[in-house]
Image (cartoon, rainbow, N blue to C red; front, top):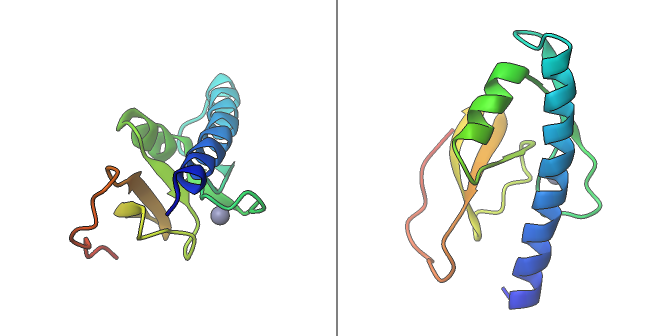
Length: 108
Ligand SMILES: [Zn+2]
């Protein structure tokens, strides 16, 4: 992967994450809780507008865990990110450190 592609990937994920954070903030203002809200896929594909539903609680837990992104099934990029968790099929991915080409985590 080229540096340019990696940067574009990161920028795209950050963009969609910010959008989801706004959705999360709106949901929280409405009371949040167990109701499932519609979030957008945070994968690296700039043309992807796939949505998924997740309870606000789950979303916030992922956000609080740090640099993690939520992607719909099949949108994971194993070469650059590791699936650390699955929430009702939705992948929770964490970017691999640059240069690491190592072990695959078996999740799923
Ligand atoms: Zn996607």
